[in-house]
Length: 190
Ligand SMILES: Cc1cc2nc3c(=O)[nH]c(=O)nc-3n(C[C@H](O)[C@H](O)[C@H](O)COP(=O)(O)O)c2cc1C
Image (cartoon, rainbow, N blue to C red):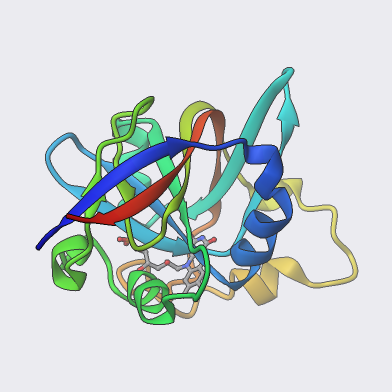
């Protein structure tokens, strides 16, 4: 007996509330350089519309390994739990870096080729949003207009160096991914 994974197209509108609820707790953002696949945990993101296109915006600090992959190969998948949350997976993806760890192998995750982008989905996080980056912008200190929350000092205190997973020195790049597909991964025992 083994596992056979199938992808089934899904309508993202049916999952908007679910996606935002899970995002708040942490989901995965997966990228590739064509040879290796890497995933990181994200809990900041936006689902919406711009330029008449459905977009998922991911915010990635410039020091992340993901940032390098995403800049060189501007496609990604967002991988969202359905049912019981695999907290150990999200936590691992958020506390280890592709700089030093092949996280997909370390966790023994099952990857599945995506129909519309060159980055795979992850069977353990079966709801998959396929995105192609159509715009990216580095967020800069001079553009903050916040006067109430002290965002610059609380989010960018610059006391943890970029080489650590919890680094807070780097600003974020907003990667606007046009949503080109959504699918669910189904696990069939064969
Ligand atoms: C729940 C959770 C959410 C996170 N959200 C983000 C995020 O939205 N953006 C970000 O740059 N880092 C975020 N992180 C930190 C990265 O996941 C972490 O630094 C990771 O090691 C980066 O992996 P990489 O170096 O392989 O890209 C989050 C971490 C956790 C645990």
